[in-house]
Length: 89
Image: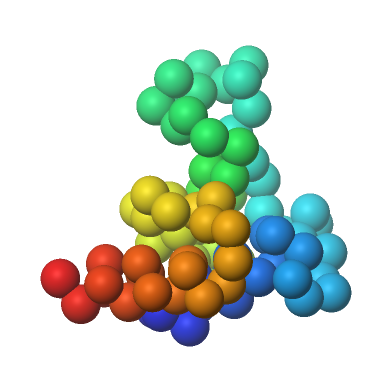
């Protein structure tokens, strides 16, 4: 899971050249439960009718990504250090 969230960090912060817009949805201020999701990097879980979608990378990483409190780290190395500690505890 460490590699998954590290890849997500790089993709969402533009550190690698991949367009994530077709694959992820972010909560907006107008969403009903937006008060629970207070930053711009909180991902919505898309409804998956099939197992093909359910087990794709961007669908399965949402819960792990949203559980992190350091989604807006200033560098990849600082993000990795905090995430390693998070997953080791």
